[in-house]
Image (cartoon, rainbow, N blue to C red; front, side, top):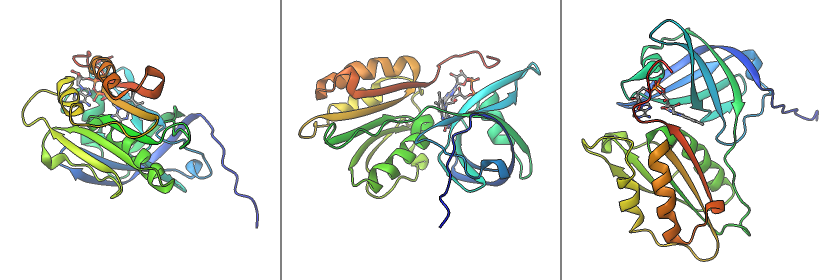
Length: 238
Ligand SMILES: Cc1cc2nc3c(=O)[nH]c(=O)nc-3n(C[C@H](O)[C@H](O)[C@H](O)COP(=O)(O)OP(=O)(O)OC[C@H]3O[C@@H](n4cnc5c(N)ncnc54)[C@H](O)[C@@H]3O)c2cc1C
């Protein structure tokens, strides 16, 4: 049998929107297709920079996680938070639209079981696609994953594998991008036995505060993968 070659080519891809669906009222699934996507390796939780037009007509780029990929298709899930070119782009997409992007970049680490016997992920909506990809990889490796997920309301529960132990934290009208929902929920979390590893994805300043709070579970900074996925009150044209 011929060996299947997987290459990671970072560069620009020109794709077509092949499928669109709503996972929830504020999360749109976007399936992109192009022959060049086949054979490409997409590291776990990697992202792409989609090329968009900003409100002043200039080019801007917005980052979206590769939720999954198969053959010539790539799946993204975009939060329709209602402000900014990324959200407007995701909302306005139609089947057959052309989408150009650069990537892939980045990768979520999945430490060996000897290095981390328990895994805990904290995220808001923007990080849920990455945590979805992580949860599938963890499940395939027989590694239990606990998730604390902040969402706008219970209608925004995101499909995660059945093996993930998820606690949904609904804001129910409170503003997004604050550390309190995740910090408050951490009080009810017990560390597992042995060394652990944490993932923390969300608003850039909020995750700094949450990362400090993760120390109460005995997780050192090197045992937490923390990444700011968006900036509260960033200027929409940036
Ligand atoms: C590695 C990486 C992977 C990412 N993957 C995904 C993904 O798979 N799906 C996804 O939806 N996002 C993802 N994001 C986040 C996304 O890139 C940002 O939310 C981005 O700011 C969206 O651009 P925008 O043009 O919609 O808003 P911007 O122009 O950046 O901001 C406009 C306004 O909207 C607010 N805003 C921006 N994002 C959010 C949000 N998520 N919730 C509430 N308010 C917001 C800002 O505070 C600002 O006031 C990822 C980011 C990174 C760094």
